[in-house]
Image 1 (cartoon, rainbow, N blue to C red):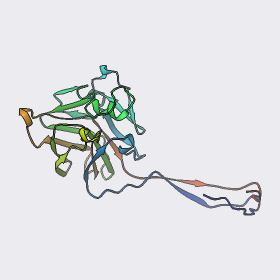
Image 2 (image 1 turned 60 degrees about the vertical axis):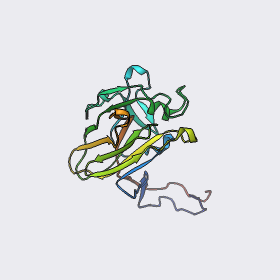
Image 3 (image 1 turned 45 degrees about the horizontal axis):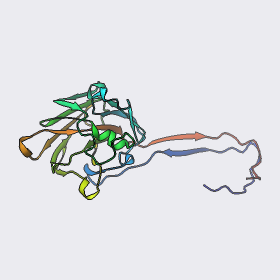
Length: 232
């Protein structure tokens, strides 16, 4: 914004100025899968945070909460009272698999190193408001040519492929994003592998975040200016 030399009379009254805070996001489809290799890939909407968890054994010593692009993720699936899931295992089982350094300096590596999983993951997250629009983001890392089918609420996406290829220098994981309008107060998510490679049917996630997607706006009322602004 540029300032101009404009003479203001004393006690000039200015009406209401409206300022819109935050960013408006648009998505071409309800569910998308993209590369997760930078902290800012995980969108912070600036809206209310419903729930965010970094799946990990709390004894592993990761920061709690783990802050990802300004979003605080509590550590361990048991840390979130509003989360119900059928996980059969959880811990620091993917350390280094993303290809990033394992010394704790890369926040994406810290996030992706911990996982929780099952043979078909079912999650329910409470705390939604009916009629509001939300963004759900799930974090997945795998290097075994797995593919996933996910059903989030009433939307599905099949054949989700891993985005990383460490051998080709593409490091990181996969960000699976879902935008939706709440029809009830609970978010339902199901993820399953499209193959049972090597007889192992398990799949896993490293965590998730669930945020209000509505843009926040505020109004500021300036009642008076006490000095003449000729020196601007």
